[in-house]
Image 1 (tube, helix red, strand yellow):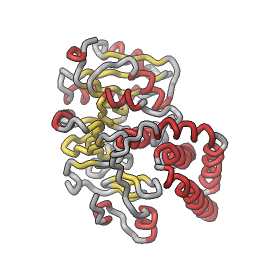
Image 2 (cartoon, helix red, strand yellow; image 1 turned 60 degrees about the vertical axis):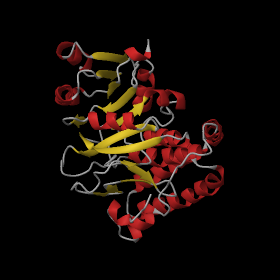
Image 3 (cartoon, rainbow, N blue to C red; image 1 turned 60 degrees about the horizontal axis):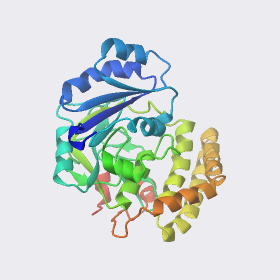
Amino acid sequence: MEKTSLPALSIVLLSYNSRDYLERFIPILLKHTPTQHEIVVVNNGSTDDTETFLNENYPHLRVVKIEKNKGFTNGYKESLKQIQAEYYCLLSSDVEVSENWTKPIMKVFQEDPNVAVCQPKIKSWHKRNEFEYAGASGGFLDKYGYLFCRGRLFYSVEEDTGQYNDITEIFWASGACFFIKSEVYHSIGGLDDDFYAHMEEVDLCWRIKNAGYKVMAVPSSEVFHVGGSIISYGSATKTFRNYRNNLILLMKNLPFEEVVWKLPYRLFLDSVAFFHLLFTGEIKQAFTIIRSHMSFHVRFLYWIKKRNATQKMVKSDAIVSFYGKSIVWKYFIGGIKKFSELNWQR
């Protein structure tokens, strides 16, 4: 297919047993998406009546069917092989878009060819005046690999008063609504299926930044995320993937001079978290941390091999900036609950 015949943007809606979300959000998506953009629904091995619902109500929409549920990363990995466009928007089925949601992001892509990834402002569908936990107005990492956002530090989610409305470079974009240049996606190797779900978008953004591209937050585009539909917030599964996948993330992407001491230090910090949970009665959650470390360390040689392959793509002049202090210390000891209080000049 000639490049000129490709759609500029394919919105790829991943769905696993999400019939209710599709019924609620597809009409809004169709209403607010320009007709020149392609909408593709990926039926990721659903066992509910998703297929029947789509056939009866939206026969004009393109559907990519995956026979068996592949999870978040593998669902996209499998489906994007079959979708050709200049840009992809990876959109969770539990996201409600708003008017004019694609235009500001496409404008940022067109104005700066070095931009590879963008995310809109992501707000809570349940509390529409607040940011949503998984993304808010752009994601960052501290020096020890802990994730935080403009609008959310750990358990503290801010009200959106326009305080983070500027277009800015970020470290990672949320997988809830993730715009990416398709050429970069495929050249960098796409989502890593070892993550299955959780932090896979952070890993992809880190690799993209290591290759010399930019990741941007574009808050003039706004969406609303239900959240917790893939892995429930606070669940043991969430805890397991949070700790294990973060170790994989650091192993793959940190420079050698940092990984050799930060991984052992994370072991110490996670041990502190283990004993805290244990002494506060969260026994199941505490031992989930142990299980996550065992899962990581039993495949340690495998992760080293993956790291070696990843590091070959790092450009020497790439700029990857972290928050230079501990967000854990700032939040739990320093009492800082808002991103704006960090006084961080990136």
